[in-house]
Amino acid sequence: MNLDEFSLKSLIRPVVDFPTAGVVFRDITPLFQSPRVLRLVMDSFVQRYIEADFSHVGAMDARGFLIGSIIAYELNKPLILFRKQGKLPADVLAEGYRTEYGEAFLEVHADSLCEGDKVLMFDDLIATGGTLLAATSLVRRMGASLLEAAAIIDLPELGGSARLAEAGVPSFALTRFALDEV
Image (cartoon, rainbow, N blue to C red; front, top):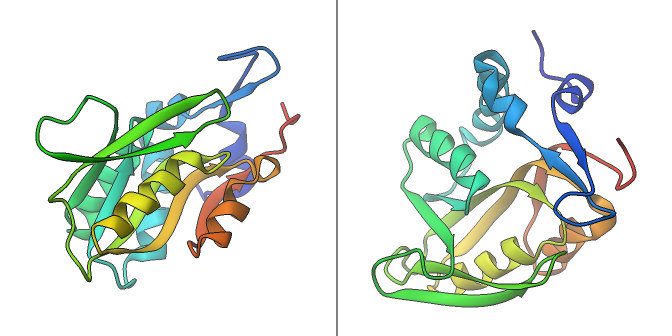
């Protein structure tokens, strides 16, 4: 089985009007329920980054943790967790951001990165880019830089990839969806 965009899209479940009316939520749960598909998805990321120059894998709360932890393990890199406010036990740096649903704060342990570190960031999807831009700010506040922001899905109409590019962060996604695509 080869992972192409059509087969990947067919395994991502659209949930209409979740979490609010007018939103089509892209549920990646079916990808994780198939060991074969999960391996193909993760192998796609591993092949892209196996020879890339970076020092750490960053993972966004919560579905990004699923992807980032596997990639960190496969590529033998330290994993940095970017969490929702109030979830980390030690000294943190925090950054506010806007999502497509409202406002929130992202936190990371203040001692996670050092000057010169380079992070490959993972999330399940790129929507408005708010969470990934907040993580970018936190990474840069610690003196580190970003190699790329990667995700399974990009929703280009929401502008997240463009905002990341404007901030100097390349992005990559395995597939894209139009907002009205069901």
